[in-house]
Image (cartoon, rainbow, N blue to C red; front, side):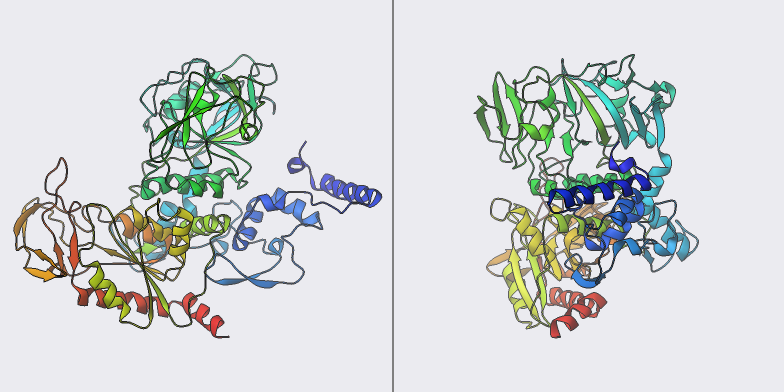
Length: 637
């Protein structure tokens, strides 16, 4: 048995034996656990130890556990503020919020609601509790309450399958997967990819309960299509020798959204983090397997982020197919994925440029798959796996999440931000005392560019309070980790509506996200709105006076009314947007390739005076934020 399952007395015995052996051998004592593998922000340690009492017990009896400090001291927590680090084991009441033993007053956080939306709740307290369940650690508690056993083992050596409602998240042990005849084609998420008997385990299957969970069957909303043929096997997959390959390392299966769009791809990462809470496991010693039934690669512009979750490269499911090379090979570190072609491995990079690699020797990363380099795949068994929450679930997070209005939180999304920044070593740098760091995000795309960008930059630079930086987050020119460093060291972050504003997830707590691009009001009765744009001349361009009818344009952010406003509420940073319709000037009506006139597909100029008024409002928020003021006080000392 592993040390995780030992009772406390057995742990004490192990401690004694370790110290006796090391004393006799003369070697330095070694810790009972690889604590460094946890790599959690100091602020998170008490919460983790509360939810994992087995680790807490081992740490309590291990003299070398680093979570116990004789002398409390102050360290930077997430780069935002300094916190007093005490013996994490002493803060026994601290809890994320979803644990059964967690009292509300000891939760990691609790939402703030400024008023009550009568359509959602009857009181501020009810609104807070609802938001906590919708978009904070209460969401984890709701999913945990749904968990049910669909395939029950009779003994620990047998298989098991447990899932939440609609198979949005599942845990599996001793999972059997038959990939000897993969039906690969053009579909990334082929619904009949696995037939009866090709996925399953040796356990007692409740087939009716499994069939009843298919209401949300959809590629990025449920795992039902992949698990609907889960079969009750009449053999023990692993113990009876039915596996060509046994994956001992814990495995995470994921179906991914668009890897070239930060907003959509970070739905993947956020749901992976939430799934870690559901599984109560944060180790990076895991395999992440991209479930994809196609023959294609996957372009990933944010591949560095995987290092916050795994020490190994992401593995494409087809790596385990039967008709492959003798030596299975993991995907390259840059996030490209491979397709095998007649003894060659063809990789597609983020630029979709194929390159051929002939494998004539054992690849250097073959061991990262957890398989023998002398074994051919096909029948693959996984000791321990979970199927991660998905990026476009109904009432999921954070794509199309319905949220009660007038509430915000510094809870789960803030914890996600801290977790990722800590593991990617993104630190908060100290600005000059009394200065506010203003970052303007430029766009080099065809549409939604700021036409008078230089004029606005010049206006910002006239304020001595500001340290101004103009950036263009093009992955070819600025690596993603460098983008995160710039974002995390910004007090005011300004940009046009677009996926780049997803960077707000990594702003410091006191920061303001200023989204440029709110002009028209929603026309609820589907009637036309006439908008008169005046003539304007600045910086050698001229906008003509036009009169246009715009049908049902909810151009709070061009038909994405609440997209980044809600994301800011989830993260807990202040959101600001354009306010006066008559002080923003579109270049033309917009040119959608198929829909015709569309406000997302044009460029804009902004009144400089109104722009500066709003930036000064943002600066006022930053300067009055308690954490920013505390940071300034420490810098002065």
